Image 1 (cartoon, each protein chain N blue to C red):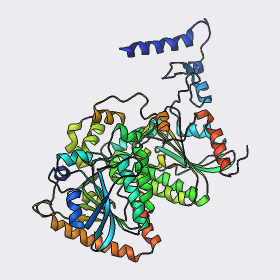
Image 2 (image 1 turned 180 degrees about the vertical axis):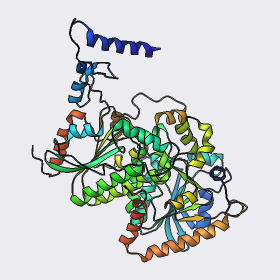
Image 3 (image 1 turned 120 degrees about the vertical axis):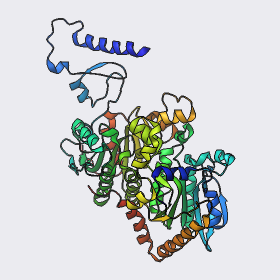
Image 4 (image 1 turned 90 degrees about the vertical axis):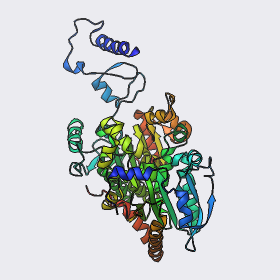
Length: 266
Length: 290
């Protein structure tokens, strides 16, 4: 793995040509059937969800989607979810529970959308309910952080038994720009902030948040995605097998304890 | 342009209250303790203001309330037993200037962290409570705040107490990075278990409840009430205005706005809250003895 600064990784993670969720899904799964809408208000294109087969086993896929070109970027709001996106995720998660399908989430968002409609329709409530629901959903949950995991908007879909993170992905409480603007009232010091924020996969593995780091090919993820895909498939296969062997309450306790243990000393 | 005139008017009001009309009156030091309502500029004696639980009798403006004043205002006298009072974040990490900030807030607020937790009685019914205090680093949630809240949820679950949480927070605490963000998940997961065991959770949103706290335990109450005019929302107003390049209406993200949108059960004025809580506890077949 390459030794890079946090800022260098952020630059890689945010690049327009970075692999997106819609590129990743056909690599990881077969027969993806997209399902739309939250049954309450609308269909948020920033959250792509549906059924698929992982090596012959039915799974539910919930992916934050930034889009691969400007048209897609606009239609999916650059991956920034509205409450409808979180509510669609919850609807599909409950469906997964009913049909005993494991859930695989793909995290790729700068954050939940800070907009007027989003607030009016309860962005905070939608995220809170997501956190609550996923903590006890009765099927295995695996989260894969693809490039950016920003704040509560990313966390809402990260309440998983196992969290994988790409080598050059970042995950943080807010963007380095936001961080430096609050801390130093200066948005231009984002680079400096990034190094302080401990937001790389390696930082987060050390803190117990990330379970596996997915290596990216020397020449870049885009140049050789299969290099990473193989690792992800191996990891999902192993972890799902292990979880299928567990009793339900043990599997749920594993997920509960993963978060319960984080920052637990007084 | 209105600002300086407004300020002058405030000062004039204060002056008139203190010295106006009645001449040669001796002003004692306690009478000098006057506070100004920031909404309607009425001058109120500090003592009176405290007796009114820091609510302006003229315009019903709710002043910020410290955690301990809130306990005095709503629970049976001397019933509060605090736990984990000494827990602080001073040892957690070496983020630049963090320790300095913590010690500064510890001095100015007389608190060790932004939340006070424990058990109390309300009309004799035992309850588990957490009260956030926005004076401590904007009530931000770091590991200690998240852990104290999780432990009080777990205590309520074990002892079958109703749970009452007062929220007041700017969100997750950025100096603690990911370990503060995940407190949202930890507290929400503990609440889900509490709910599955049929625990009663009343969430009381006070000014301000935003960011990671609004997007976790604040919004997960069986009953969610808010203090009048409290600011409640996920994203900050400035961030939204910058994103949309438009001005938001004055009442955007106010408690009343959230109620109209269906996210708050009821707006309850601070001085009616105790009665409201007793009524709700009673309707859950809990033993309240007035």
